[in-house]
Length: 389
Ligand SMILES: Cc1cc2nc3c(=O)[nH]c(=O)nc-3n(C[C@H](O)[C@H](O)[C@H](O)COP(=O)(O)O)c2cc1C
Image 1 (cartoon, helix red, strand yellow):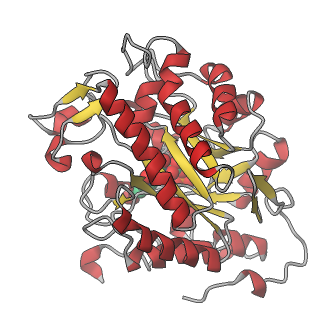
Image 2 (cartoon, rainbow, N blue to C red):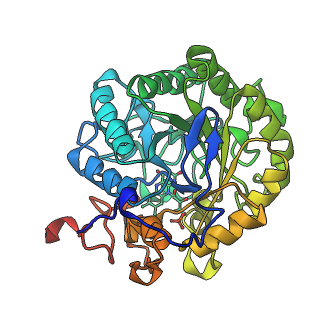
């Protein structure tokens, strides 16, 4: 496959002036506004360290021209290894592989970032080999259907302290490995989202009840990272702007949440949607249309002073350009369409839009989260199913 390097491109007329415009995330400068969002692939080594396949995958995305690449999700706690080949950042043996990965991404022209996760109740005991933990002992209605022995317990204060330290320690490891941005995963119904939401957090102590209490663990993590690392790295927080469940978080709730996160150290807000009960929103199904969450991002942007990223079924730079030029978001994350064609950004910049291999939103890549041994893509020939090498 021939790769178009940035340097090769002589763009006579930039059709995407808002896309190809620099921006700062904290102290980190991005060359354009296109982000590759966290995308679990099952490509890590069996021990959770970075594999050559992961390095090749992210190198190809970086060479394709986007500015910021979130690798991961990477698991911060050893009790939450939710997939056989999930990326880990819970121990120091992971640092060398991460360092290789981040430096390769940087060499290929993008800013390396990593998303940090604890899966909370959205996992299977049979896979993690541990009790599932959550703010309250409320089973995930989806995951509990897959395991008769599914069991979740309410976290003790000692559990909360451990998880807080796990997120902070993971960030220090990422910084030691040379990352420029970490993303705290507070979206999609995972542990920190479970804390933030009145839907899944029914605690009666300092970590439940009021919004301030529900946000407390996240604030402590953000403040803990800042006190250890200062402004050496930038911090993104990914949220579900709407959980799309009765009694869950709605965009307006973020009016109070976002200033709290900003005061605690957030440099970028990454706005997604959904939890497992509304999974068709997390990875939007085609019938939701193009860019279904842009107005949610626009509402949250009104409450924010930091750059705001939108995501979801954005398949072309012309859609990205119109979102950015309308002022509804400052950054646009493109996931599946960059997997379908790593060079979506560079080809568009070069005026070669007709050469882009389109993502059909067939949904095959999603099965990396539910059964396929590795993520693959039905239109990208370099990402074949494992048995068709
Ligand atoms: C295979 C796959 C794995 C994903 N893994 C993650 C993940 O680890 N963390 C996360 O926050 N989002 C994850 N997502 C969601 C994407 O980051 C993104 O929000 C979603 O795919 C919508 O963007 P798109 O329409 O551009 O693909 C994943 C999506 C897919 C398809």
